[in-house]
Image 1 (cartoon, helix red, strand yellow):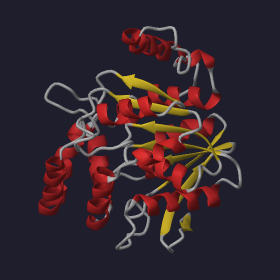
Image 2 (tube, rainbow, N blue to C red; image 1 turned 90 degrees about the vertical axis):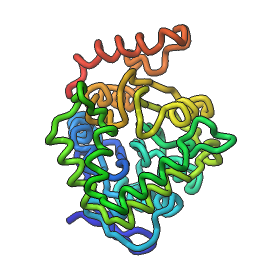
Image 3 (cartoon, rainbow, N blue to C red; image 1 turned 120 degrees about the vertical axis):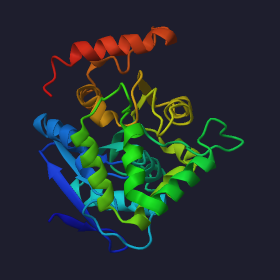
Image 4 (cartoon, helix red, strand yellow; image 1 turned 60 degrees about the vertical axis):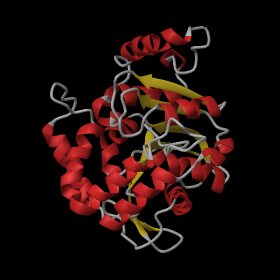
Length: 308
């Protein structure tokens, strides 16, 4: 089993597919690195080294009692980069709470070896509702999540993943089998890591880390995300980081890696290759109210030229 040791001796499961420029993919809560598999596979086929790892406490990695804070998570990411990238510059792609690892790594490790970053449905800059973050999520919501997990974690995640993937009475963007897979992956994690990590992403304020975003930054977020609402996260991050560009997926839920796999893969490949035809960085002359429509048209046209 491909395991590496972190600074505090915790073993992390890491897998690397393909050769070329290293791209490190950081998964969301409460999943594992396997959630990136469809995108990692395409990256490997397109000349990249796709590196995905299971966060401590999740998947096949160790489940220590402590260490579920973003300083430690960032140090774990540093260990992955050092072990896997061979001294090369890397691109970091973080989903959901994985965006927090990127923010803290950039500040805590001075962005060492990082050439670009992408944050997908990310919790950055700040999830919690406070007087100076009024669009955030109320503490009561996180308290209810904690109570639900402590009372019956298995039942809690059955409901949680429906919102995560936008499943409703009339909406079925993912299969029942994928919901089952997500649930079984969540149940691999330990209860203590699951609770502690939820507290970390809910309460960590990444606003002091934002000055460290000095490399090209892509932000992708669904406008119907109920798990990590776009207003205090994706949109706030885009306003705060000069190097950032935001693509909004209209009407999409949190788990866009599954509901919009091809579109997300295309947007990431365009970002990695600096493809000017992608439209990611040439919207300056487009009125704000028309940008999403233009992005949708560009993505639909370019998807036919990039193998997925």
